[in-house]
Image (tube, rainbow, N blue to C red; front, side):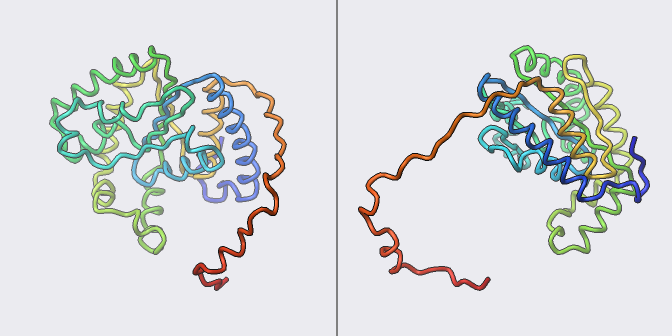
Length: 266
């Protein structure tokens, strides 16, 4: 088991080697899912800066976005607030041959909405009571449901927030809500524990991912998904490039000379 000491963090080269192996397997999974018409929902939850976004990118960068669809919803509109709570999420659920990845999900109600006072205590309690039933309905409908909680410690979150403050390429990631969640660490811890206890069911269990080391967390997440969604390697289709039709019939390069081109500065 990996420790949390800095010198135990995975190095880039072995990480990239293992990631490529797993991404090849994800391509085989993709072919199986589309061929068999499977449906899957993967829920990624965790505190701010836990590594959800980076893990999702590693998971999806080599597969088709038409099969692996990422859903990251903004704050609900006034219209959505008037709907049944789960409605805005279910409209994004998969059709046959799709895997939908929620970068935060209906569990916002158990986390940020509860801690920040965006829902009432009664709404929070009702969510925790009903969620296992709703998820049983999802699973009974034939959808594979996988729930992942990425857990990074207090000191690690502080390091990642500090890095965002200093890096102009990541400053956009740090919002006032992030700073408030940082301040309310223990409130979020209590909310996390209530959520995991109430919604960890046999049909839709939670899996906690240690994410102190982002690289290990990404590999462990992908490996777990490949074990959780059963698939077989299907032989690739034999593809041969056809001959181009009407060769030399049209000078498609001459027509471009009249166009404006982007200056080639590099």
